[in-house]
Length: 532
Image (cartoon, rainbow, N blue to C red):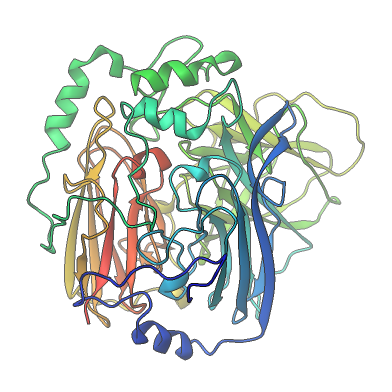
């Protein structure tokens, strides 16, 4: 993009010339190989607005005055041309979560583009080559934890699944505009008033300029691990809250108190202990609280594809359809060997596609805020329209499936190969200090972990903290071990390690970060850089 009045331009030249620039010829060459197809045009306006979330109306930010934003749907091979107009009081960008797109369209301020300032717009254009369930959100501060998100569906022109209906379900945790709270205020409470990672007016990070260059990343990782865990154990405030806060914070009161402490309000065995840093007053399905849920209608015997997206800022969700079993067909956009389950666990940023055969009656699509003791829902109906009170569906406590139990479909498995490069990333920090980082170093946009085009790269994620983290890689999909599914976001439990492999086939500068927005904006993110 070129700078023009009222429009956001490209960032300043990269200060590390040994790395491929997001705007370099290598990126253009890779895009041409994707053979861009028919152009599909869209326009979004990010604006401050009032939203009806069912239980109440709240002032927030959203795309086109609705939450989730209007669905973007294209066919694999199409060229997406979307103009984002920024009417917010802050700069913003748009990130295409899970899409393997050209680097200069990735939407990371100060890395792939300058922020889109108030009153300006930016034209995103790329080839959507791979089908799947994806979504869009900002990559600026904690804007994700407002109403700025929308589903992005890339249809398969050779769709192998047969179904009668398709539903897109976006689940979210909500606090913006409730009791005077905003995500920015919560972040400052959590990290002692530091706010989000500092950016100057051009979107260039104010890092210390001392980004590590070692590929293995083994040194300097002293911000977490045993040291951090011991500190947490000694601090009584780090213990999970009891009573109302542990049950989810009656009337939302738990959020402010837990934010002041920087402590997790509840626990989950599934998540290895602490469930999250923030208790939310509301949890939503497609922008609706359980007081006024969305109703999906079908006929008995209908085969329905449900695309489930976790757009939350700090909450993992357990999902089940009362009275039904689900067959998982995809995760993070990629097909898996079909697996039957009663319930699913989704970390922030994860997506699952499932098939269900509808029974006759009225059933809750139950969504539990894992470890936070609160829930929300949508409703499936084959008949009638009168309200129904639901008991907790037994499926929530039945067989639960996570990504580690899945296998990639044969057509998307990586060819077995020893890695050419291993990059060790230790997640460090503690809830007491809220000093989240990777390899002991908070985010510095000048830092690079080098890779080269054509390499098989292994990322060795080691969680040295007492908190779980959903780890997300931009611009690529990786494979979980032992034939596991292709993913771009994976749950990493406390004091656990996972090795994921990917092929370095998309040149540029790519973020790796925790998708808990309060962790990432406090420092738990870094950059992979392709060397020239």
